[in-house]
Image (cartoon, rainbow, N blue to C red; front, side):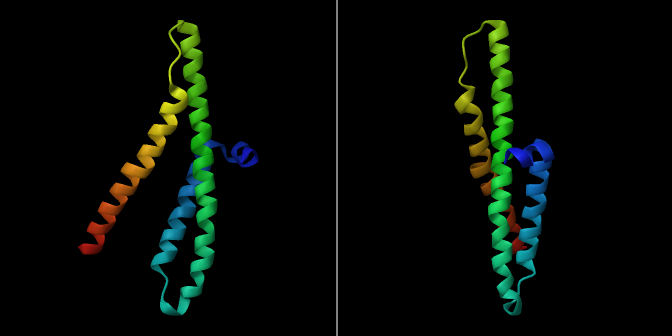
Length: 112
């Protein structure tokens, strides 16, 4: 992940993971009974997109935590709990807001 991160950067990794995710989901819409064998290559991209997304998120989190620690040291305030707060917020946004909103909008789109 470090090599890919150095090559693409945070934003690039997130962009590539989202493009691959879009391609995978769009590929699902093209499946028919005669092309059902294509599900395996499409599913194989899940691991790639998942790894890129979470690696980039973890690295961004580390950068934010390091930046906050530097601010706290320079202002001589008490140490914060950013080591757990930022990953918790990212996880909550992904699993709660992202999944909930995606399910709601997807269901609405399929119904109408």
